[in-house]
Image (tube, rainbow, N blue to C red; front, side):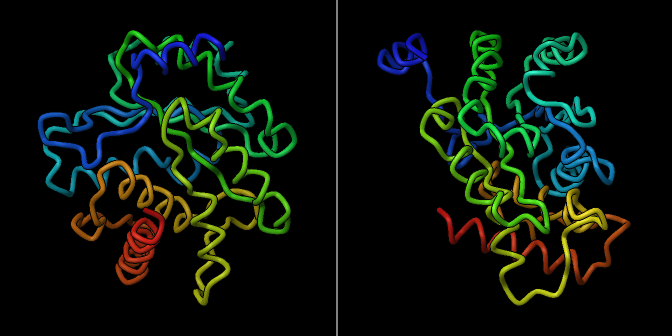
Length: 239
């Protein structure tokens, strides 16, 4: 942490994403590192890629993931395939998703699990974003712990938190009758994965996802459009 403080003081690192992303500095590649919350229903990365390719971001090249069931970030940093994927190309953005239960049980360790990735990629020019996951459906007490963990200043020094868990909490506390959870009450159903991708699109590109014509085959058009509106309104309400 001391080295990070020094780097911040001398201005070597800007922890914020460009706002908005300029055409000449547009995101072209994103790598997601996580577990089943990332890869369920074909993956947040692929839903995000569908949104990007059906929009005007013609320069975008790749969205990929290394996501293994139950993995923590500590597991990933010891995993040869994760490290190989990190080094496989100069990623513009790396998205880190901690195991939800690990972040709930040991929220104070989140920044220590993020830090090795930061220093490994420091000279690559990659930016970081953090995928705040949601509380389990029947465990609402998880939400404030997860929220505090991902919004703590020692975490956000490293990059931008995408508050997916907060958006889910807001969504389910509203009037919508559409459920985002899989039957197990832990993972996302197809609507949940798509809503998560819409939030990433809104936050990373600062652009209304209604501008993208992409609709997953697993969701009807009316629901997809409703989710696009909800994601963009959440983003605007939390600027």
